Length: 169
Image (cartoon, rainbow, N blue to C red; front, side, top):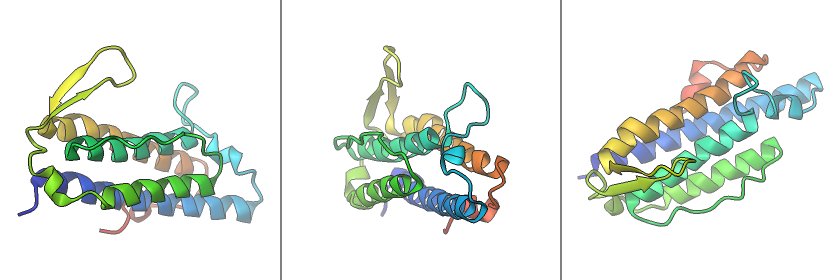
C-alpha cells in the first residue's frame, strides 16, 4: 500500500509543477508573439509588496523539493535561486521534478508521524508531525505560490485558464 502522505504530496507536486511549466511556456510564447521584453512578465507582481513571478516560481519549487525531502527523511537539495529567464525557470522545474520523482515511495512509510522542524524565514522554530506539516503548512503555501504565479500571468494578458493551472492528472 502506498503511504497516504506520499499520495497527498508527490503526485500533487508533479501535477501542479507540470501545470506551472505549461503556464510558463505560454507566457514565453506570449512575450515572443507580442514582442514584449520577457522581464516585463518575469518581474511582474500583483502588488508592490509581493514577490515577482520569478520569485513565486522559485518559492513554489522550493516547497515541492523541501517538503518532499523532509517527508521522505532525506537532505533537502540546495538550489541557487539564480534564474533569470523562462528557460531557467523551466530547468528549475525539471530539476525539482527529477528529484521528487526519484524519491522511493517506501521513504514515506513513516512520514505521517515523522517530526518535521522548520525555520520558515524566521528565527522561530516550528515543529510538526509529517501529517500536519503537509496538510496545514506545506500544501497551502505551495498552492499560494503556484496560484500567484498563474495570477500574475493571467493579469498581464497571457491567455491561460483553469485547465492550464491544474495541469495533467
